[in-house]
Amino acid sequence: MKWTSAVSEHRFLKYAVAECAVEIKEALGAQSADLLVVFVSAHHAARYDELPGLVRELVGDGVLIGCSGGGIIGAGREVEQSPGFAMAAAVLPGVTLSPFHIEDSDLPDGDAPPGDWQAIVGASTSDGPHMLILADPFSLRGENLLAGLDYAFPRAAKIGGLASGGNQPQANALFAGESVHRTGAVGVAMHGNIEIDTVVAQGCRPIGERMQITSCERNMLLELDGKPPLEVLREMFQDLSERDRQLAQNSLFLGVVMDAFKEEPKIGDYLIRNIVGMDARAGALSIGEMLKEGQRVQFHLRDAETSTHDLDAMLDQYMGNHEPHSESGALLFQCLGRGAYLYGRPDHDTDMFREKVSAMPLTGFFCNGEIGQVSGSTYLHGYTSSFGIFRPKE
Image (cartoon, rainbow, N blue to C red; front, side, top):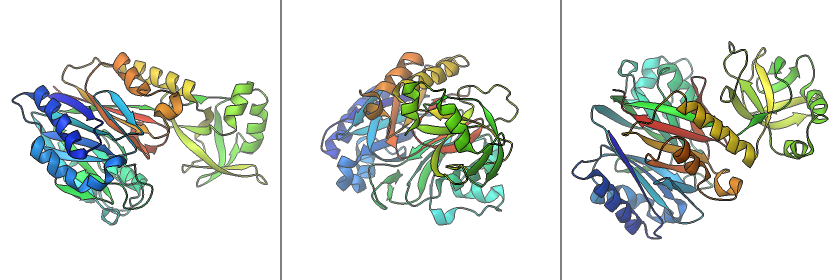
């Protein structure tokens, strides 16, 4: 297995692809890429339809997958607010690649058997595949797709993101082979001599006490340990520092413990969800997640410093269980709300990855939502950096 990554900021797409192609070919030598992953900024929107042909002409006919992005990441460098094109190329001996395109109308219903889900991605559970998934945020029920794939492929690692760069339906692009799609999702199922390790940094820290949901209705949080959640927040607010009180005004989230059997949840054990509204009369909160009575939850805060510490801890945790492989490559799916907007400088997350893990080829884009796993289940996240580290199984 061999990975390489290149990035170009040329304002003309043809020359940007050409610049990356030269670097890719030089790195691969006589080898041909089996997989090509491309991300392109919205500055090149007028030329989206030309991209697959350019890549095929200048790089080769490996399996192509990619999408548009509000910012792109290549060769371990983040390009924001300017034209950008990034490409990862991988030589994958002993790996079978099954590309797919899914429209929302293709999604099986909630009672469908696993075989229906296997059919739409062209792989079977017995293959033991892993998946890279890129989806349009306007036209596909992403959470339904991920829940169905988890049901049909419970052991598969799944990583990816929602295309960005366009602010309305049909404005984003999804690339699959020689086709350019404006709706649905594209992806590739991979099986054989390949593993994908996932690292999901949600950028939050807990505040207050961990509590239990004693009453809820769908996504409405009605009681925590028998108290209305707004009453809990008022009591907690009195014990916060002045800085945390300010953060709580607009950066307050709810963390849901995903492993009911883990007595002392740590970083990475919480699924972080937005607080999307409140009912002052009932003292209830509306959460961006379906809730269940008995779940343990804790309020969280997010800011640049917290996001830095969280990513640092998640990468340390990963390295405590893995050793970098010389043949590995990585993809990064980073929220549009991170990057220079959050940290005040570019390359924050990519620099930390290279410092903590390795200088392996790293490619990606800034997403409208990030796909990653928490406690073995796959979710659509926000404000997150979701890494997929690809390495040989053997």
